[in-house]
Length: 119
Image (cartoon, rainbow, N blue to C red; front, side):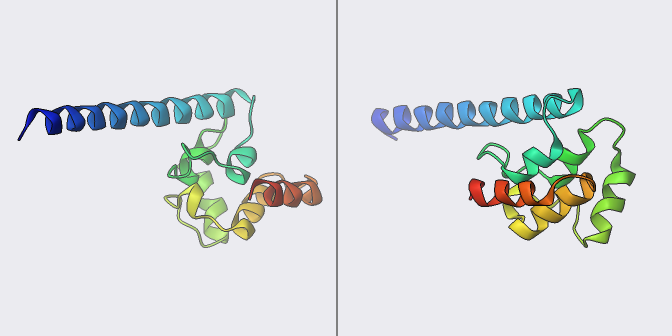
């Protein structure tokens, strides 16, 4: 392997590490914000960032206070979704349904306008 290829490969590795660190940092920050009440799980589900698209729905839901695996599964079972389903793979309809079930008294009209705006 010549020296140029080694340098390029090393640069690619460093870029990959930086990207992975950024993803981990953003996800941890989101989970902390949800736990503290600064952000809602519904907001994270309605408009995921590129760093959180591969994050599971279960991870987001269990970040909420007083939410464990059992409560998460119970909510998602009604919708026939696995808690391992990623945010990026949810359809708009699934997003809206999860958020509506999280906040049954919430304004559904406002929720649907957020989904349209995020796409």
